[in-house]
Length: 412
Image (cartoon, rainbow, N blue to C red; front, side, top):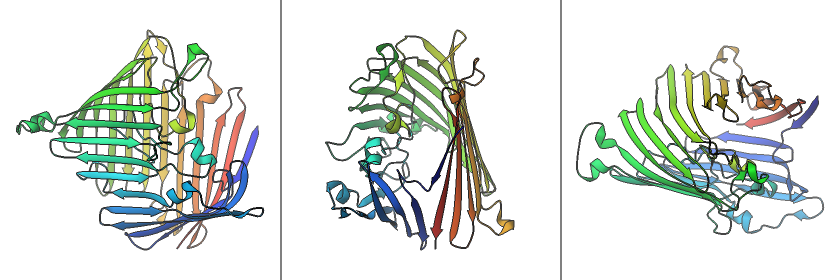
């Protein structure tokens, strides 16, 4: 068994994150530790204050980096650009204008069939200790709208970008038919101009770029509770896919629920949600050269109980003539128990766990299809938490790999 013990690692070093709060309009985060820049170790202190002014939120990234050999690291173009952690106006979908400049943690176009939950933190950003300065810009009017995503605002650094214009045709002609007047029709385009797909029949040699186009339909039936949607997409030079279903959710003081359930018809040479939160760290993605098609289902349920217990379960399956698509069925489960559940102990205790199982029920079973992670946060004093994270996964040869990290969090 291979065992790795890591104490508060950020990129490749020891870090103690700091978080303070001075009300709803100001908070302070940051880190103290060591990082690796182009293979060389440096010390760094960074403060990340976040200020809110009505709908405007601004996060700063104030860092100082040095080592024993070179002293204080001189600021470069990227350092000046990274003074801004993010600038954001409003929340997505809640205002006629939404934008976010800086780091992107979960950028989405439409229902996310092409680009969903995308993060612009890539390998180059990690290795050089810089964030990509991305951009999300949305316009959301009564009759039409536009969603855009750019992985970086600098022309020589942007690789991934996408856009989705949409219209509400019945509102354009002045119709006020209940339910139907909210029908929205959109088209999408997303691309990565730096690295495209890797095709299995070509010895996994990546293409120079990937281009995906799509169209979608969105019809809110019961506001918040029930929305019907339809997505179709084509990966240029490869296959296409379709997804249709229902989504919605509602929250009360003691209980909340969110759900999504969809039917999928996918080509083996097409990947839904191609640009996701892991894309930048794992590209190029592999697609098959076969023309087989798969029918399948995807569903997820997210429950919240008494603002203390949260349960997420998702299940994905796709098959053709009894043959399963690679990775399917895929079961994901998550559990979070926050400090409200442990309030009787008068301690800050938070517990979360996640479990993934790909190719569920396959014979023979591949060891690396399963992964589990658990996280426990315990308040040892009024201002100090100890956070323990344990990850268990398997190498393709069946060797178990356990990873453990311990982090100290301070707050005031």
